[in-house]
Image 1 (cartoon, rainbow, N blue to C red):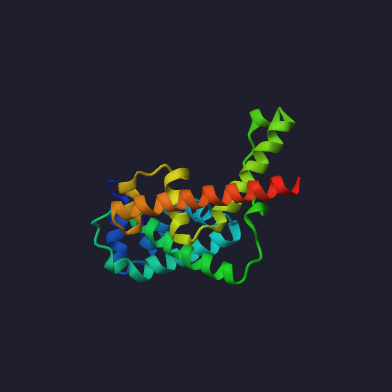
Image 2 (cartoon, rainbow, N blue to C red):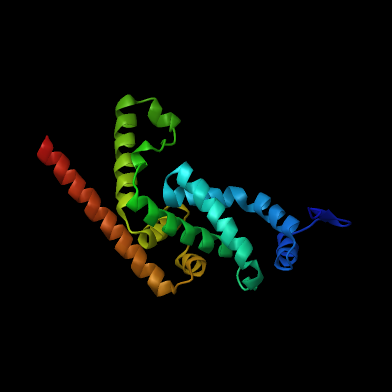
Length: 197
């Protein structure tokens, strides 16, 4: 494995990427170690499933290793990995749609300590999160990626466009469509709930 530090200190990511582009597997292993948490976190957000996220991360790093020689450094490595991870998540989403076994409602929600002090608020919060997660799951992968990157990660339209390899205009249009589709889905679900009561 390649050393992770040189005479002057730790090797920076750009140097590791340069070494990996030359075929240094040890350098790539170190890149994986340094970027895994961010890549996995994004994969979980995009798939809403830890099991699927693990598959997505594995596929993303496999694609990255196979394509590292084509990485020219015009964008940051993290941006390139976001793009690869988003594409791998879209592929995984398509497979999951054909063989659905796990729903978003089975993913544990984060615990809000303030809300937990008020059981009625906790119940409402849990129900809202479940509805939002279900609506997000219904979005096509390319719209879902936009909503996750903008509304969960808080990225700018420009950053999203760069990470997904699309124009800023396309990012704005897709985000608008994704948000509108989520609103429609939430409205439809609310109407069904009201009719059932």
